[in-house]
Image (cartoon, rainbow, N blue to C red; front, side, top):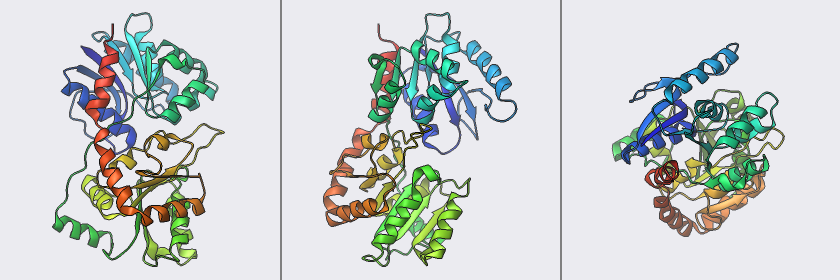
Length: 370
């Protein structure tokens, strides 16, 4: 059994990287021989045929060079799995073109849908998805959006992501992180968001919900953990300063795996209030960080109308909110706080159902189906 994984960027901390790395590791653990073509950022502990980033002036040349690389890499495999739509599915289509090898695509989110509507990407994307034996969608919402783009529903499957447990941290580590990030244990409640700090993730709307709740909870704290590669984080800080709320906001951009475990274990409620840009087909594909919170028994509030609906059992492990509505977010957080033990218990109970062995076993069963 030999599979070529054409992957998103490896070696950085992101949901996309977690998906690719976990699938590669999971398949190998189940006896599948895996070859990898991927963009690489940082160290990767296995051989990789390195793909070039298709951005900047060299986009077309890099794209063509990558097409040649995957074509050579496919010679000794039986199946190809592209871990997202653009451009990875296109590489996969080219790799199997004119052969009997099977192609599979992961429908992840924005870049598995938006290319269907972009001139210059549309034709290639349609060809790739038409050639695929199956498309593994990480949420029901993603599945619905890919179907709307014209892909046959017969080949679309919802296969939820697994989760890799974060480490347990010691009391000494907890104390050290509390000092480093200036988080007093008396703060309550603590609302946490993990993920790139940018407009579409809705951290500012979540903070505005925290502002509403401050009337009842004077010591409430909002922690936003993630990369700050744009001006959005500064916009949040400016808003907090203008409203006299700086003491109620922490923006953290340097959290490693152990620090993440600290933040999840310290928070009261997890929040991911992303919004969908219907014009450009940008949306939250699933929200794996919600499941990470379940490991620590943390209920979640998250947006309707996107892949988050597959991560939250509404009314059990958390509550779904209207998009871009601080008032509704605040109301849902309050509802969870009013029955916290029940929501927390349900979150802990659901967590074991998200496993990478379960996810990769499903992939494997389709790769080699007769």
